[in-house]
Length: 139
Image (cartoon, rainbow, N blue to C red; front, side, top):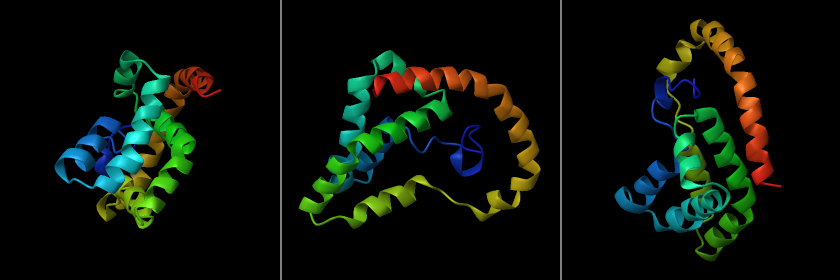
């Protein structure tokens, strides 16, 4: 459902620009902005050009993979920053916020499964080659 932008995933929950807008400008949470969003965004900016990051906005699977890789790289920094602010619980809050759950969507999963499987199989080869290029940036 995430890959195809269906249900609660209509808006990409791992778009760093959207997350920065949310936590740093709209619903300002300085702990999440400074300790979580900024390190992830900096890591991504150090590894990818602006053009590459822009292209990721349309490639949800790759965007999620890049987000996960960058988050993994900066997680020790994130945890240390939140600990200094006595705000360790903010990490769990942030992660839960990334995983929207809607019971109405869950009810439709079975009918969606077959279609998603067929569509996913078509995109796996393209994604695999992109994944290899992304992995090289993290070596």
